Length: 109
Image (cartoon, rainbow, N blue to C red; front, side):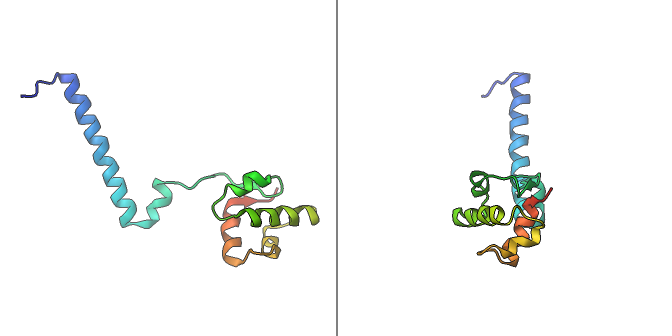
């Protein structure tokens, strides 16, 4: 019925193997949440200097709203840069939980 050449069979098997592998990774990701960071790494794997980031770049992060980004920039300008990441909690709208998330993204040079 289906007369495939040897090369066509190899390609079909390869594509089917990739599909199965994708299904397995998806299942593992749902079953074991810890693997999410390994299989699907977050954006911005390298940390960014909070004293050099622009407003537009800061807004791109999911945990930073536009107003919060403006407050961070204003704080940075009024205090002549951040001396430590602990100062993030001094910015209005940043509590301990959000500050912890931001510490994972930023660093100070």
